[in-house]
Amino acid sequence: MIYEKFSDRQLEVMFWWCRPSTRNFDAVICDGAVRSGKTMAMTIGFVLWSVENFTDSDFALCGRTIESLRRNIIEPMKKWLEGIVTIRQGRNFIEIPAKNGTNRYYFFGGRNNSAYKTIQGVTLAGVMLDEVTLMPENFVNQAIARCSVTGSRIWFNCNPESPAHWFYKTWISQCNGKNALCLKFSMNDNPALDDDIKNRYKRLYSGVFYERYILGKWSVADGLIYDMFDKNINIIHETPETSGDYYVSSDYGIQNATVFLLWRREKKLNRWVCLNEWYYSGRENHRQKTVSELATELRKWLGDIQPTIVYIDPSATALIAECRHNGFTVKPAKNDVLEGITKVSSMLADGELIFSDKCTHTIEEFDNYSWDSSQPEKDSPLKINDHCMDAVRYFANSRPKYAFITKFA
Image (cartoon, rainbow, N blue to C red; front, side, top):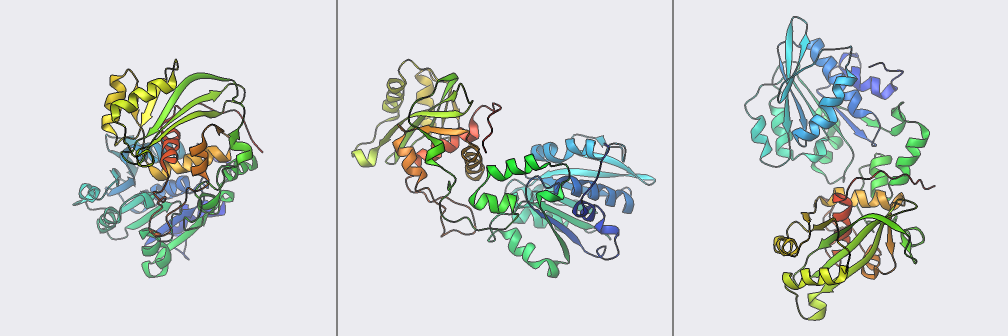
């Protein structure tokens, strides 16, 4: 791969290990804005450092999962390092020639609290942890403890989270005590991004996500979650012409409300339209409907419409089974809360998600859906009147990935 130029910050992370002013640090931490080029620069730097300083040694490349590591690091690495080093790939490792020998780089996923067991017992000359804030602390500590070879170094990168996050408290705020070099990245540190792309990303986020992903700040999630929801943009009073498949997303409650939302794409502007909602609260009506009744209500509500897929709260196994029994194609919705909120936020900000004014409960919940300030250590919504918001999130997280062509100023 031929590079036209690197930013000063990218060069700093690539070569900190051989510069007199920074080479004595034990670790490097790159955090900051999305699309700032930190992952590419760190990967190139990690490989150059390892082949220059070690031979016939073992290293670790860590992501939240091995699948995400392959997608974000391993496959792009082949382009990033094309013509610089030769990469031989095994099942869960790669090998790179170094001096008169070969270094091996093992893949590890730090998805949950039991993942630390997978990295126990190995002896490493270095480790790179991609998106370290998505990994549990015990996994990261175990990976660091494996680096016992003389001259070993720790390489971290991440986007900011809450200042109550363990990584911020343990590493970011204690860089000096950890003898770690902290390098903050902005989108301006990525020469490959033109101004139109930068402005597009700035449009996609607001509130806490803007502060974290654009400004690179470790900010507390506070206030309304969807403060970018604009009734003049995201609510329609006349149903537009739509086309393509219908979809339904659902949140299920026993005494809490059960919600069905009906979705289809707008034909002219290619936006996702929430055409209608079905809402029933057992608590408010003093009677809970059975899953059989709910499936019957769904069929009655849809009339002649046959949705391609019904996305249902993955914990609602009885409702999933009953809807399948009634002839619906059902998929358990993807239930990653923060990922779903981020997607909904981006779609709202970019005008890709609109709601009919018939969706009264959904619109009402947008006005009140807030972060839980009593739990600053994690980003959690208040679990109050959030059933429509869950159904919207299930759709954003699970929907088919069509390309949108509309741009909004």
